[in-house]
Amino acid sequence: MKKDIHPEYREVVFQDTSSDFKFITRSTMNSSETITMEDGKTYPVIKVEVSSASHPFYTGKNLFVDTAGRIDKFKQRYAKKA
Image 1 (cartoon, rainbow, N blue to C red):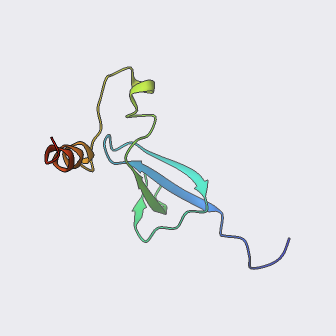
Image 2 (image 1 turned 120 degrees about the horizontal axis):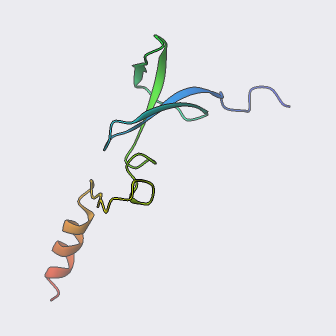
Image 3 (image 1 turned 135 degrees about the horizontal axis):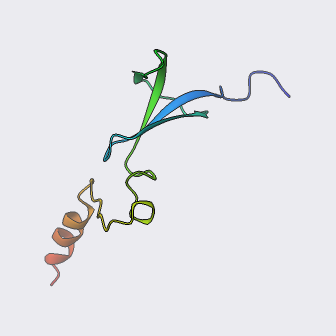
């Protein structure tokens, strides 16, 4: 392998913002935020909106996630044309 062309592959924490579910895995993603887990180590944290803990397919619940207000933006944009 060539040196200095590959991103750093390290342990990071992915945190589901809708259910506060966290898990540690390895990734090349970068983050300026950090979190201290139960094991006492500090990891970079990547925040995601949907994970297996909150996705309707895995939970069996009919939960609708609209954190960005996409439906409201759509209705406002096309209400003028109607």
